[in-house]
Length: 325
Length: 117
Image (cartoon, each protein chain N blue to C red):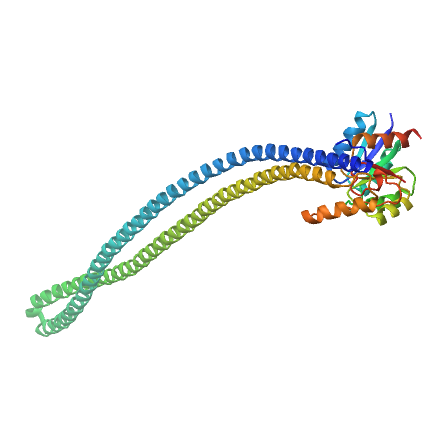
């Protein structure tokens, strides 16, 4: 149908322009969206694969660490038990040695005591001999020359008694020394026992501290591995979420294509509009025809304003035209 | 060659308008909103006219017209068609109104008219 009517021609022209622009915009949006979706999808897929690989590697490291730390802990526990057993053994042996030493010290002390008692006994005998010697000299003096031999015997007895006393004194001194040595040995034995107990206690404490430090290190490392695994899992989840997001974008591109199809269908509707608008009709008749058609189609109503003559600039749907003030 | 400024917060629109104008032999300066436009005018004193959107962040097209004070011819390029807006723009010195999407040849024709005059 020849478009002699300026209004119909203008509507046709404006709607054609609008349709072409919308199609062009949709094409641009789809191309851009598809390109970006493809490129981003490739990048995210690469990232996801890398993240999964890193996660698997980290989980492997975590398992190795767990196994190694369990073995290390077992080794440390066994070493601590052996050390405790050895210390206990040494403590028992030392205890036995000190017991023996105490027994020996006690025996030495007893011998010293006996010697002292013996020396006391010899002193008594010596004293009595001196008394006897004195009496013998007195009798020898009373008997005069007949007692001279007796006096000689008494004198020899007196000398022997003196030597016995000296020897007894020496023995007593040795007994005293023996007692002092026994006391010194007992004192040293106590010191050594205290040192041994202290050593055992220190070693036990240090082993416990070592075990505690090892356990703390193991916990820190295990936490680090667990954190790494968790972050790796989150990275994989994030990659999956981003891929899902790209699918939404892809869906957006599909929606745009569907919108394009709607635009194509609307071209058919505009054809119906053009056919229905009365040729050469007044603005009000044209408006009424357009309103009726679009009301039936359920679309927003176009408003064609103006008075006697219409120009393209009066059409509010006149996209693209320049309205100069 | 004359210089035209395009003020629009949409990069594709700036690209389309700029492309049409450059093909017609104009030098194009782009600004992404009214505030940017005012600043770029200070840096480019040779701008002969402005193509400006209405709805923009920081400074709208109407506020841009107020700031410009009629120093340069401005054609508004917008999706808006309210008569009150057009009236306000006209009062502030705008010389024309284009509803998007635009026809490149009509835009170039209008710009040529203002630049040569």
